[in-house]
Image 1 (cartoon, chains in turn blue, yellow):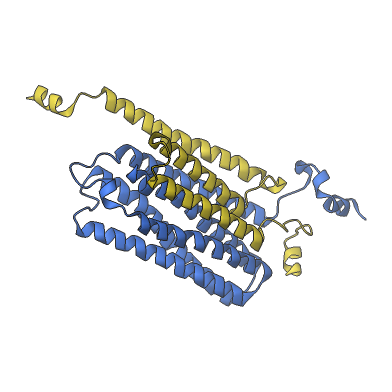
Image 2 (cartoon, each protein chain N blue to C red):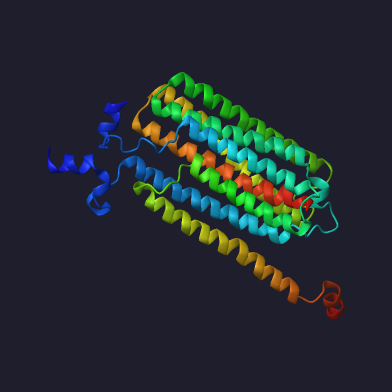
Length: 207
Length: 124
């Protein structure tokens, strides 16, 4: 056994500095993780704006008047379930099982679309009763925060379609696996942001 | 599959566990569902002392974020994740500065500002 093989055999005993460059998957994951953190910082700024402005209703409807808890619970359930089906899909990508990728990712897609349509129906209802983003500072902050999250979900759904097409055309090249891995990270990170949204915006409204 | 991994120059078994298993996703789902339901219940119940509810909701939300990080994003203390953990720590630091800093500064400004009707009177 050569020295290099020995080093690989017991990886834990070799110091990090002597292990050579990290594998591409780890580096790509790290880069995407940095992007996700910067995205979460954008959301933090929007959360800060919402926290500051949530009381400034300018005589218009307040948070407690507008938000329905049952609606939000269904939205949360959709997003949570889609996170798990996305995880099952990632496992299928890992094992190279094409039909179960299509199965789990189709469910993920449907749950994502359900979430978006629920959110859009809420927005259109609010617009129809005159509670649009121009009504008060509170509503501007609300539509910016929740709308940005919805926009991220929309982009995620487009990305998911592209990834399924790539599995169809390119197969399971390492490149495609990495992109699927990053998509999974993106989708789970959106769920983390949603925890903040439903806690601060929707549950906080009724305190 | 194994040939593709070798083509990337990866040590055998180097990333067996970084994607989790079906079981770990289901455990994560269980924790997340319980935490979500408890926070929805806590926001509408009379059982809990009302001023304590926001703190409880905050704790539940942070716990659920932790569950998602561990079971769905697979953040762990594995050696190839050291950089991810450090970046996460810095991210949490920046998020805390942004959110709590803004809230403290704005509450302070609000507190020190002259009431709007008095201000309008003075400008006449």
